[in-house]
Length: 266
Ligand SMILES: Nc1ncnc2c1ncn2[C@@H]1O[C@H](COP(=O)(O)OP(=O)(O)OP(=O)(O)O)[C@@H](O)[C@H]1O
Ligand SMILES: [Mg+2]
Image 1 (cartoon, helix red, strand yellow):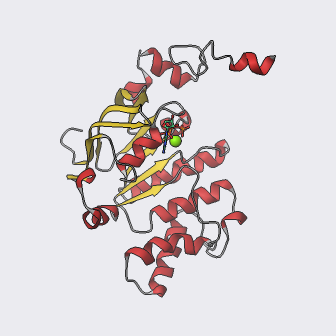
Image 2 (cartoon, rainbow, N blue to C red; image 1 turned 30 degrees about the vertical axis):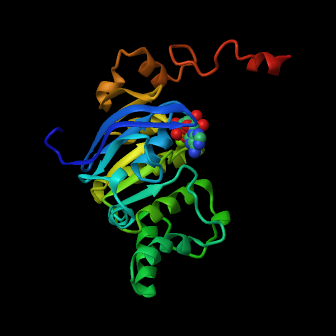
Image 3 (cartoon, rainbow, N blue to C red; image 1 turned 90 degrees about the horizontal axis):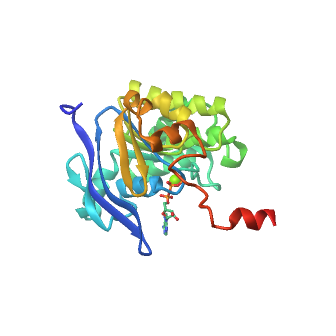
């Protein structure tokens, strides 16, 4: 692994909101062609880490290198160049409700290229074909199921033929079969198009299906990093608890003494 090209390197990343430290010294590398999964409990900072990696949030300190360029130090026009090599699939698909599928996907092509509308239309068709939604160009987001919207979100992320795609919870809220379809799509795209993928998820089935490597985020830090097989056999009780989904263990979701349950059961 070490001799493979590093596409992203995060160094000593710290990010806080209103004085609360969310990411407390994150170091990680993403290698060319791999699918790296970032897992961790709800609210542990996974989306925040992704937003820092795509440059929509600035860290308090630390660096994020994408293909050797520290994106925390680039000016707008330098950043625009890097911006073209990656696509992002947002946690809730984040489509524009007032635009049809074709318009949602072509938006980024219209913004970043000077291509003829006919060419853009062909490119949109090709992306829809890739995600199994040929013929859905004129549908509005409200006319699609959750899984279909997620696939349109993926087609949009692929619009600029990115080398790198970030996915935030691509299977959240989907039934297990549709979630499996999305997992297979992510796998196919990474293998067939040699896309490097960074996937944030807490869906363990997805992790097992798609991950080459996994990092686990807990309490602002990466507490485990390794190949899927190493994580699966980890003796760390926090990782075991996360994999088995047990409410009992070192990771506490409901703090005793919060009074939350007492309030509910009064
Ligand atoms: N823009 C913001 N302003 C203030 N606090 C924020 C902001 N974004 C995130 N946070 C806080 O940072 C923490 C981490 O949020 P984040 O969305 O990164 O978690 P997550 O791991 O993606 O959770 P989930 O699995 O529920 O999506 C939360 O406590 C959240 O309230
Ligand atoms: Mg999130």
